[in-house]
Image (cartoon, rainbow, N blue to C red; front, side, top):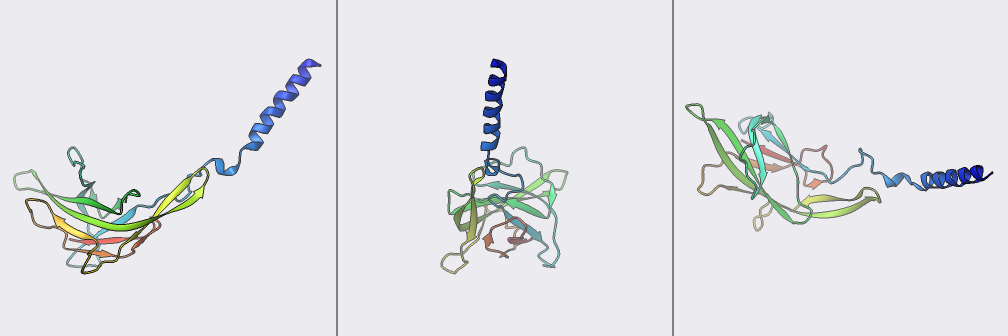
Length: 176
């Protein structure tokens, strides 16, 4: 009789434990999280044609040492939820005469605001970003070269979608 009572108590405790879990205790993999900005590269001479190039990206202060440049026509660029601007370096890697490599880095500073949106108890919050308007008094984005200058390889930047709320949309076009 004791075994039956102990087994019933243990079964009740285990059943109560499993029934107490709610579906928001686990964040599903397909739950939308903080989106990244999608930057796509285009041919400056024919602005409807995407252009692949060996391009490295890095946040200002990071190093490109030891990174491999792979040919891409778009990049996923994260924005910081703890700041209102971020400066990214984009390095175009080309073949140099004699078999070496040339590295030409341009910097783009993006200014934005962000809004945190509650998803669920398990997933927490996600940030949505909104690029600030480009004006003469406060240009956005801002393109600069390295010091000393090595010639800008980026010829033009177009903001296609200033609301960065998902990763299904092209946000920025870079022409080179």
